[in-house]
Structure formats: structure tokens, C-alpha cells
Image (cartoon, rainbow, N blue to C red; front, side, top):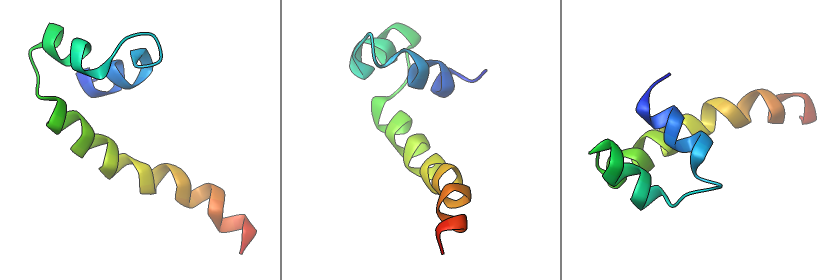
Length: 50
């Protein structure tokens, strides 16, 4: 599991800012990672609805 996946799993209980500070990573980099992951997650769901 990458630190980005860990932050994504824990963000409902803790702020992204806090998690990034603890892991010593950039919150901007987390949001960049998340933005890149979004199309991959939504495309298979949207495909059957066409």
C-alpha cells in the first residue's frame, strides 16, 4: 500500500493535512495522485450506463 492509498483510506477519520504532515509528504502531491486515480475508478462504472 502506498502512502497515498493509506491517506485515502484514513481521510474520513483524520484530515488530509494532518496525515500528510505525519507521513512527511505534500498534501498537494496527494491531491494530484487522487485526481489521477479518479478517472480509472469512475470509467468502469460509467461504461455500462452508455
